[in-house]
Image (cartoon, rainbow, N blue to C red; front, side, top):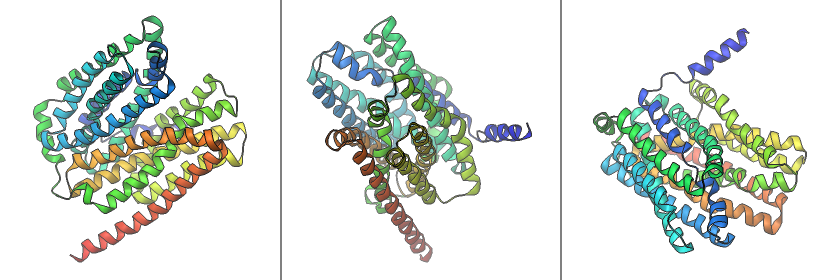
Amino acid sequence: MQFLSRGYRFYIGSFSGLSREVWMLAFITFVNRAGTMVVPFLSLYLTKDMGLTLAQVGWIMSSFGAGSVVGSWLGGKLADKLGFYDVMLGALITSGVAFVLLQYVQGFLPFCVGVFFLLVLSDAFRPALFVAIRAYATPDSRTRSVTLIRLAINLGFSMGPAIGGLIIAAWSYGGLFWVDGLTCIAAAALMLNRLPRKQANKDHGTAKSVGQRSPYRDGPYLFFLLCSLLIEIPFLQYFSSIPLFWNDVHHQSEFQIGLLLGMNGLLIFLIEMPLIKHCEDRAYNIIRVLLFSTVLIALSFLVLNLFPGLAMLWLGMVFVTLGEMLNFPFMNRFAYDRAEHGQPGAYMALFTISWSVAHIIGHTLGLNLIDHFGYQVTWYVFTGMLVLAMGMLVVLKRMMETERAAAAEL
């Protein structure tokens, strides 16, 4: 009992020290993401309701990714010029209206254009959110603040599809667009009510950096983004090609696949914040944490080939979840630290864009590799990609040491 009591106190303590504003950002993000119900059902809507072919759906998803890239870039630019508050608020309101209007768009090309502009508006929110965390969190609590936002996103995404399924059954696909739009506007209203603009404008000054370096001329940062991309592309297979592997090779039902994916969210909810708190308390080197987490993600692919048993599906999910919990918060932390050299919005926009590019490349790459070479070769390809990322992280660590040594000599 004493062990459980200590564990409970450590878990609760891992959430302490976060500002009220960070908690409000997490709640606003939760409301926004819980309302994101169209996306999981988009392919079904396009094929069943609109009668589009799978090839056309693929092009629409590419428009989705392209809009995300442009929106992330634009959001970062505007966050540096206008401040994070106005960009976040504007993105929530305009994307809410765009979600409602998208249901009235008919035809393949008009829908491609509609999805593109929806994502431009919607994903402008993300880099502005990262800049807001930078303003509202102390340097020591930024990694845990990002972790809290990740928890809110995971909870929102886990609730959204379940509620979306009920809405489709009781109403129609059109109901999803209405609910998505209205929850965006509700999140904007919550932001206006609980995060006053006056205070945000004052905090925007603390988010600014004294450095003037462009992220496009920051060699270590660009190299870091390439490392991140090589990690993100394999990770995204757990949301596209790996569920197909579970079903085709191991004959797992939709319910069993749901349990496997659900364990990811449960472990993140129970472990991630205490794990990040432990790493911060021990002041572990960020690059070493990223390196270790990449090893875990690589192992999640390797066990699928080397030990083809049903238990390995669960072990693989444990490996990738632990890797995800360590990797992505500290990726954000590295990006925050580099943002001290220049405009935070521009830095965080590039970081967000790396994820958008991973989405554009990752799902198509994985499915095409499986189609041409089969599952086993595909998992080895992604393991090799992660091994390459490990080697590049070692190089990045040396680049950072050289940069610090040069700065110390000045």
